[in-house]
Image 1 (cartoon, rainbow, N blue to C red):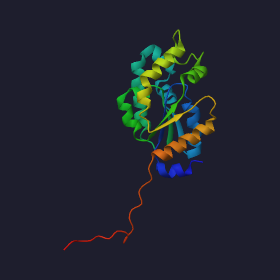
Image 2 (cartoon, rainbow, N blue to C red; image 1 turned 90 degrees about the horizontal axis):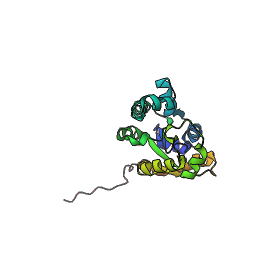
Image 3 (cartoon, one colour; image 1 turned 120 degrees about the vertical axis):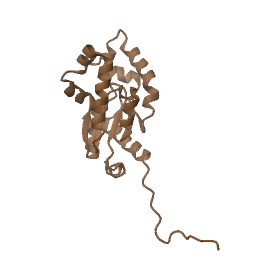
Image 4 (tube, one colour; image 1 turned 90 degrees about the vertical axis):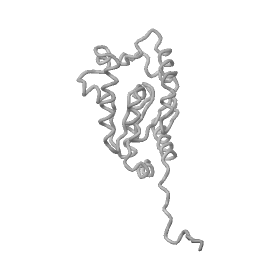
Length: 197
């Protein structure tokens, strides 16, 4: 399914960005299979590096410490090729992280707030949603981040009705459109060079 895109990518990694609950990990695993790439999730790597869950990092060290750890992990994974990397929803908040995201192709999974809320309601593992009105909080966070997500190389709108395979196909199509093929160099004799004497 992804072979034409693989040749265009030339080993570039894919970074999935978007709000919490957008499906970056689920879609990322399927995209990696389609491309013959490896899959990584920065949140899982952060938990491994810290030796504790993200909720505990937030509770004990705060969001700033978490964001610093997130940048360290991203800087390390950006050195690898042929990876699909699911990132945390706030990875786009640090300007420095965009330097690392530009090592590959960034894909924004753009999901409506209503869908995000239906996926996340009742989830106690999302520190930023431990509020009286999680849906309003989601909307506020999206409003703050939307212009940053929009800087992605590819935007893929999705809904709850989209099958993950369909989303993967849309991502592949978006990447193919975003990456221009190398121009074909002129062949000998194709151009005539004249010198005025």
